[in-house]
Image 1 (tube, rainbow, N blue to C red):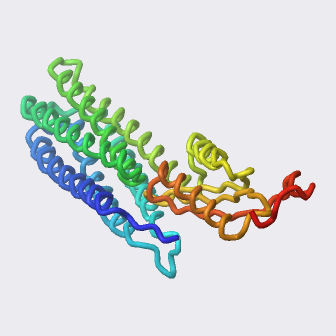
Image 2 (spheres, rainbow, N blue to C red):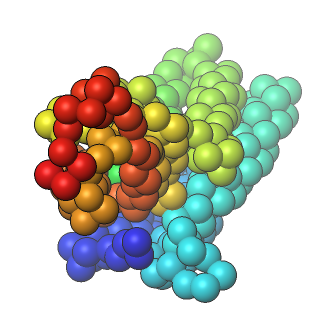
Image 3 (cartoon, rainbow, N blue to C red):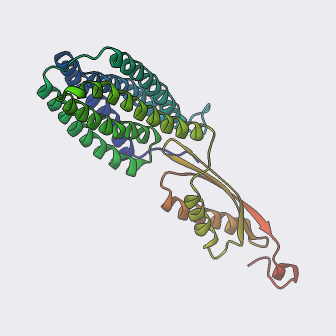
Length: 306
């Protein structure tokens, strides 16, 4: 069947991507001003991370808009994998930013530079933490409602930003001490490693989605419980699942009494599909009914016309 996205899902996904781009642009502006005023490598590290956020969030925006297109003749399962491709693109950009930051940290260790306008730098980083927290809170709500892979990847990256911003504040505070000058480049290198770990997580999940990884075991067990709980279902087999954007794709075979009329078997299949969709809204579900000869049928005690 063709599955379409609800108006609420579309609004939430678009709203989350617009909020992400707007937040990233705002933070780039204030961090750039703070870096010019302070010369802090930790702030530069955070600035570069925000620049990567702008690129990654824009990729997300384009990918989600494309993934929301309904299925067509060339893409019968929809365009949901565009989200996984966006996640892979994010991972690539984030990895690049981590490498750049790490190299800058090594260079600054060789030639330390004193930090200027410390108060401004601390104020900017505190503002960055507040703006990021607001965005992540909204993203978490959108993820709960839509299960979007791209928004989840974006939220993970911004959650990493919170940690990098805290590291930047600590590094700035330590520069008050004479021995603290080296902490600025050291913390920038730590931030680079944190960013790289985030890139690895995002990239790994995107690859698994592109490779059609099964839905989590808990969800597959839920499907089995729903199906086998139906009074007319004798069994099930060949359960196949995967995720495409916000759409869960579920395929399975139902074992039904071979003596059931075709119309009744079809009705049972539709009832099972409805029950599954109650737990997996918007899912693309395909059910095949298989006739099974029961012991009662073989013994001839069942009326074929019942």
